[in-house]
Image (cartoon, rainbow, N blue to C red; front, side, top):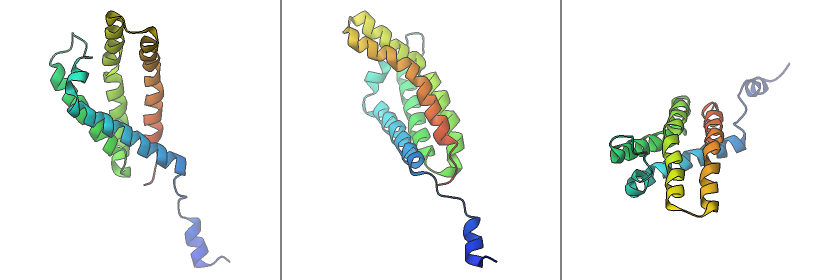
Length: 141
């Protein structure tokens, strides 16, 4: 027969793996800092808004607030599952701005290596979406 203390410890959930916790904090920091930068340097973000979108400055502030809220939302377990899909939607919503940044670089005749980095950034959105999904499904603290 096992002791009551041993039985109790058998029913506890194991702690979250350290790498997943670090990954969650890194992602939360990434989005929080990115969100804050929208308010610190709004003109830089407005410059990459596609011309067909209305109210570029308003969109910069809204997307910055959403990044900040989503980043912070990844931290508590009770908001994580809501923050994840929100950040995924946001990552898809900002894709036109990432494409516009590449178009702007090409129009300005920026060096080929800079254009290549901007082009490589586009498929990295898929990796970012996967990372958000993985982290936001993480249970526990």
